[in-house]
Image (tube, rainbow, N blue to C red; front, side, top):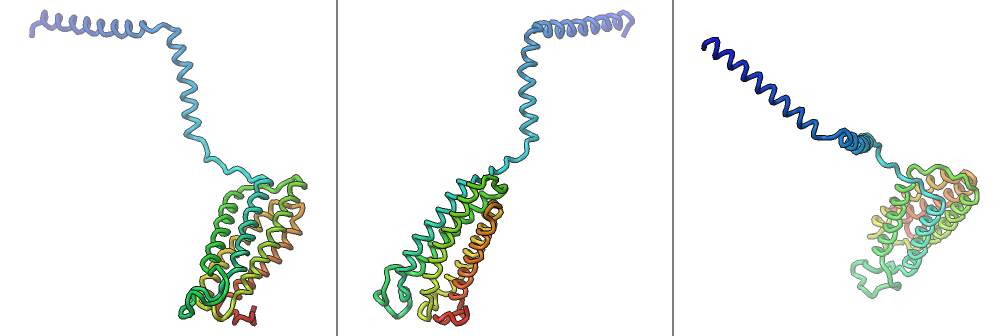
Length: 238
């Protein structure tokens, strides 16, 4: 290539570069300063929102109020009261092989009893989960309402358990295992729920603790009554 051709190529290259630069400058100048500022104002909060969302911590569970706790306790109390009716009408011979469907007296069977206890366990488990993170209450009047509701639950639930204990005996041997199993599960849920309630009511914690102790005793006897080696219908070992 000659010197003249090389010079011509260099000049053309510079011209092309200059033209490209002019195009870029023209494209940039097409946006007035006010538009750039307006875009920045829109972009800034969006970026901030995205940054906040990315670094946000998990949503914490809200604490259960005293009124909500009373409502939950009352619900379990009502379940226990309804189940007591089923237990009272229990036919100890219903479902026992060779005795026939008309044997014994009573309109309910052990499966209904077991299902009823499972319902109480479900309600109690849900309550325990929702109570997670609840701090002790500071309103003594609200605390007293919780303690009163718990005391009422203990009375009603003990009545249910005493009826169930009274239905244990030799003829129900095939049902001893399933009933004992559901009672053990119930015992664990009620125990955890009671501790959660007690921790929330420092004003009347002593009374609630005493109520829990009484309920624990009755629950233990119920489990024992339906443990194959624990009872022969006469509660000899319970």
